[in-house]
Image 1 (cartoon, one colour):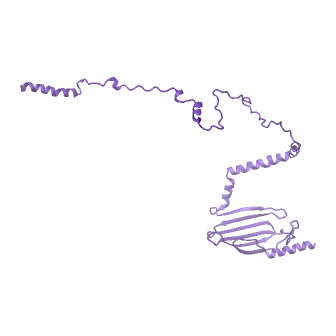
Image 2: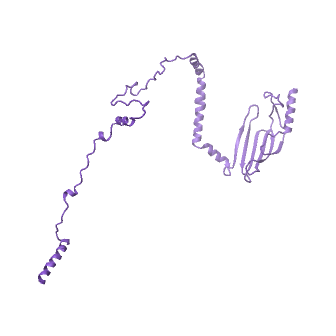
Image 3: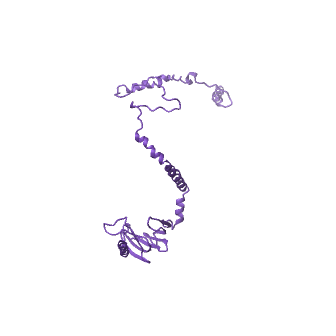
Length: 289
């Protein structure tokens, strides 16, 4: 009895092992085809049903609203009106007011007389003066000529500059000057200006001016100046309210005339009494003649 039961028990235990061994073919149950088949997709609606016509959608949107002033919806398939100009041409100007074109007035006709007379002057001013001048200034700006010349005249990191000046005026002798301006010289807030002019043997001028800031907010300055002047064409127009600009007299400064002065705060005009006295004497001498 026990000998028969042992082979049967061994056979039952070996059956699952043979089913799990990799080298043996096994028969497994597969799910039914109906279980793995996906459900059919829903049919998409046609475009007309998914997207209603714009005209119908606009009407449904405006339904029940105040449509005062709303223009009527355009008719589908309506053709554009014919063009008033040919292809590539300009459209003629509409006559909005319905009036005829106004004729040229007498002033509009006569204005051509000075236009024709001064047309040569216009050509000279435009093509001989303006066009070359604009071209020259444009080229100088493109090549930074002004900035390069300024860098040549500057030193001390731009705090000092020296440049020439030519002075010319009607009735006065022309002169050439050299001016030197310095900022923060010797200490912060100190400005020194030097100038020298020459206009001939009897025309010499040298000037010095120093300004120093004395308050922390730069509102107060102490100014010291000096000048040496000798020129023969000093103008004098008289004194008092009856002086006239057309009665000008020129007098000559005494040789070696100089002056020194100072000012606090804003500098005003400085009057040299000796120079004014010499001008009065020259003016009186002219009246006596």
